[in-house]
Length: 239
Image (cartoon, rainbow, N blue to C red):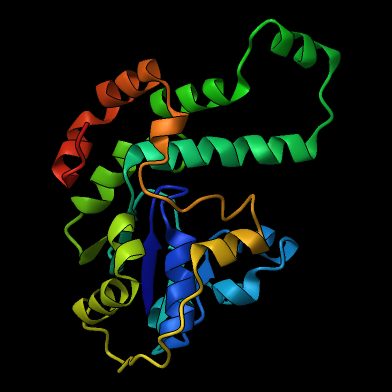
């Protein structure tokens, strides 16, 4: 059977996968096969396996496949949905996009002149993420609303709770789904986010709560609340 590990990008999905690996010894999958994990040499830490079966075969199997996705829901498989304060998610996502843009290109003279004239590429990326839905993921609030309002079994995990009480949160998620196979904890050893950051600073950037306060300007925060305020309030996040 398939259990989705669903989230909007940069919301703690990979950290949840690490906890599944470290605490339960469970390796997980991704619909994207995540080649970046191999490139950054963190596949083993994450517990990542490439998918070799078709989804109907995975669904019919007695084996449980925990599969990462950022896509909007489109089926009735059970899911664990990891959510994070949207401001932190979008700030982290903007930095992620920017860091890999820089790695893939050599800035042209036009880009350098734009920077000299005050252009801020990070703020431009962040503004677009706030306003415009991505084709497969939707906007942050669209992703949250569609996963949380589906009729099928979906267990919500807040990234903030996961950081503060990782063992409690992941155990609650696994037991609440009432999976057909007995899954029991094997290990209490959990790597800190500082250790993960040392391993891959661009991928495991900060993993902190409220980092948006230093990285989202007041005008962009106001814009964020205009587009995503309802979902934030429903989840208990405040101004």
